[in-house]
Image (tube, rainbow, N blue to C red; front, side, top):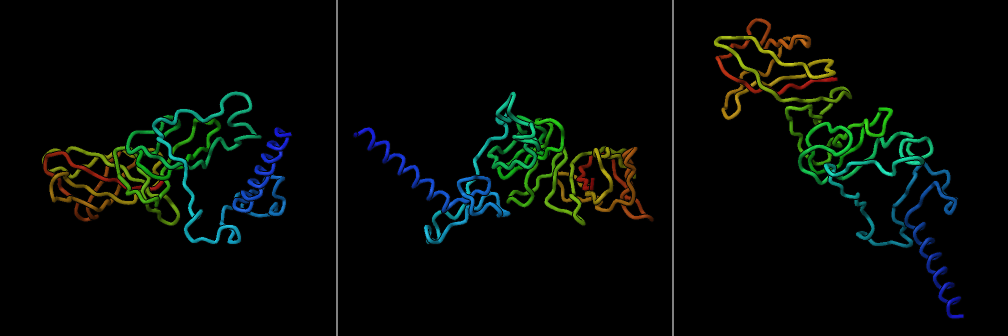
Length: 241
């Protein structure tokens, strides 16, 4: 009799817990909550004032934290796992994580730029689970850091993403020639800044023409090109794809 009583109490507590959870978190795709089957929201975690009238309890969502440098596999693997129509037909395209790594690259998939702490999403339009690219969510509080690998900036022009890349070039005395390798996939130039790191000298912020085949750039205005004394110069190139 005692065992039966304990089991009965356990069932009651579990039922109460489920009922309360559905009062707070409403999930459309479940037979246990048919009253919201037609909702546009897959998960609705907004507080029900009848069960949670407070202004500061249960009001935020905390994402799981992950160090993407140690994220090395999309599980579960094997038959019945990732990348099949019934489970993950999009191969994790759009997956969002809060990354804690402050440098390096993700352990699986490509990484659009050096990692920093913040929200990142997996952009995967490929036909394989591991063929995507981790990209930062623009505007998640982190400053853009233009590096020698392609950087996604926090800006767009006419709904087109602006990318940036940093590099250097060397000239001989009195040269107006600037050769800058064209980034992969570039469709049009947006801007350039040529300067010398460690000095207060900016040589050009105007780009008159740019040949994406040869990398030849003419800086300055149509009537006057910038003349560069012998030396090595830094540049930041901004472009559209």
